[in-house]
Image (cartoon, rainbow, N blue to C red; front, top):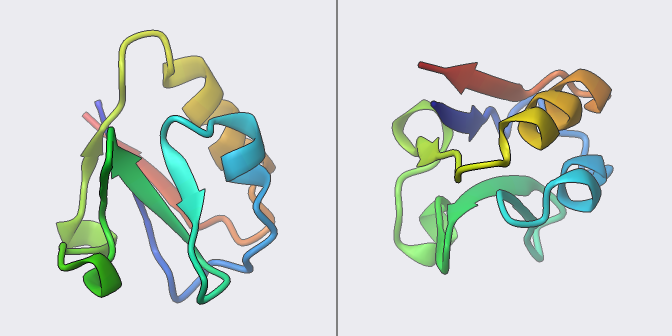
Length: 81
């Protein structure tokens, strides 16, 4: 499974990072991004973001990612097979 964030919808609340810090990170611009290990899917970090920046969900993290998507006030987290 993969996950991505639509930064245009992100409200920057940081709930996703609180729930699943291994998958989500808030950057200095106040928006959340997905990550895979040390690789952050953000143009500011030299990587694609949004629908082009899909991160693989680590083993054992799917339930947390689903919870983060459900709790997200911006409804900006998308999970794909």
